[in-house]
Length: 108
Image (cartoon, rainbow, N blue to C red; front, side, top):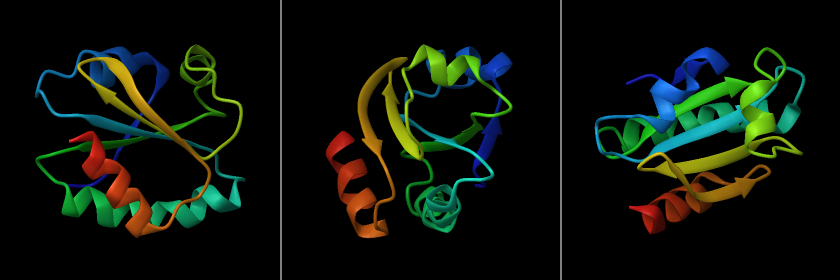
């Protein structure tokens, strides 16, 4: 499953009201952000490895300013793990694939 690009307009439905009972990982990013671009392939691998366990989504903060403001995003990349519509944990900055996998596994 590919990573879903979401927008402010569908954040509520896609993340907070997610009905499939699995955690939702949201990457807050921007096109101009080097570490965000480096994180992209890592998240692609994670989306494949955790398919059926975690939904992986991305939201561009420049095109969608409302959602980052709602969650106090001050630096990017920021990844937030949502469980049952609430924030379970937050990870800020570029992480290695192994580090992200360990973090996700602690959330499952």
